[in-house]
Amino acid sequence: MKLNDTGLADKQPWMKNGYRLPSFDREKVALATKQAPIWIHFGAGNIFRGFPAALQQSLLEQGLSDKGIVVGEGFDYEIIDKIYAPHDDLSLLVVLKSDGSIEKRVIASVVEALKCDPSFVDEWKAFQIAFANPSLQMVSFTITEKGYSLRNADGVFFPSVEADFASGPQHPAMFLSKLTALVYGRYLSGASPLALVSMDNCSHNGEKLQTAVLTIARQWAQRDLVDQGFVDYLSDPSKVGFPWSMIDKITPRPDEKVRASLEADGFEDTRIVVTDKKTWIAPFVNAEEPQYLVIEDLFPNGRPPLEKAGVYFTDRDTVNKVEKMKVCTCLNPLHTCLAIYGCLLGYTLIADEMRDPQLSKMVDRIGYAEGLPVVVDPGILDPKAFIKEVLEVRFPNPFMPDTPQRIACDTSQKLSIRYGETIKAYLASKTLDVSSLKLIPLVFAGWCRYLMGVDDNGGTFELSPDPLLSHVCPYVASVRLGDAGPFDETLRPILSDAKIFGVDLYEAKLAPLVVSYFTELVAGPGAVRRTLEKYVG
Image (tube, rainbow, N blue to C red; front, top):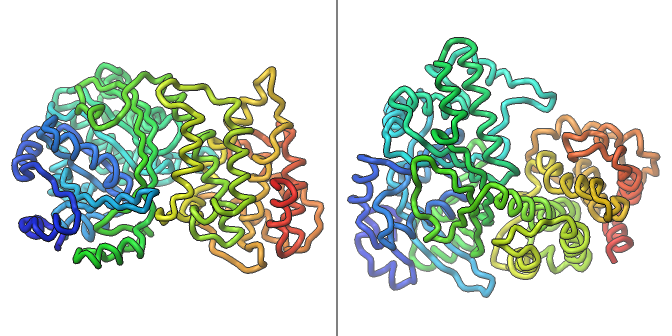
């Protein structure tokens, strides 16, 4: 059972082992897509392969579309060379259900996978041709939240971005510059409408994408490197839409147990690749069953009927409410809490943490007691039901190989949204008292403790990648287990940074509690557990 077009020709062994195969004519779909593409996606990793690609496959299998997706990768080119190319752009989606059953589905909706860079001349030309085609309806993205950033922590443009400002659309190097250059080509070819759709798991993702693209375009226009009309084109929602979205599906790194299970079936392509850029990827994607995608219906050139595959299309205000519900209260803050304390307590599975009495109580109370009071019901999804599914079905799923170490990546970029928005809502409320927040400050103290890279037994562990580690870790570098403090001046540079927490925790009058918790967390080996027992119960 080889994952390529030749290997799929003999359907019998696949069907015998319970694999669901594509039911459409892939060659016909590929030809139709090449002639008149409708969907290009950038970010060729696991979330795309396990979610958007599967959505389009559903439309193809229902006969609701005759087009596939062209996928581009602008950051980690090994994904294309080592995963897509050897397998004829096919993926195997393995859905790990909470009841222990497994669904195995070959995803064949990707018809072309290309490296997005002018140095790959033929592939770049293919993107230019596709962007110029009036048929193109949407370009979507899963490039992670930091993929939209043009500036460093001090608000200064990165040198590479400044270089792209100067070189213009002819020689873009950064991904967002490459994207803007491709859209400029569409503008020059007739300015057909288009939707640029961020599907990344971050607040106001469409706004972040729009701001970045417009910033680049305006810089080029100021230097007379593009027409001013291009800026006007990007600024006209009837020409270019930047819809907001909320995406939710957990697609962890490929898991060894899943790999072994597939090998037992006779599936041969199970090699897990770790690229030079630290992407963990394999021919298969293991994922949970629950999934949500809510998108602002702002598509000036039309769109695939993805509502037939389970996508919610609505207005921006509703998307914002759903996104805030999920990112600020009902899932992401709970994930981050488990990530921080899971690393400190030596856990390697989120599901195992949910059997820890203190950790399960902590996320339950952060969700229901501290977060839910400021959630605005979006109408299309019930917040209480959403939290219930997260805490009782999704996180405890023992078959989901998701780790606190993965979730801990880029925590400094997440705290301001995952907790800061709740704090702001408490501060603005006439009926809620910010001083009633007890466990969110405990998460902040836990993160400061995490930055020491020392677990609760006193052993060292590797911090997950985070762009601010070199900035924040030095503040706690001199702290040792058993130190008694005082730690106010030690932590002040961190806790007063509104870019990290969304608010200055001193101004919000939460910093003293964070410092107090931190003091207890560093009291010695076992202090993390004792602190959780004391304040969570």
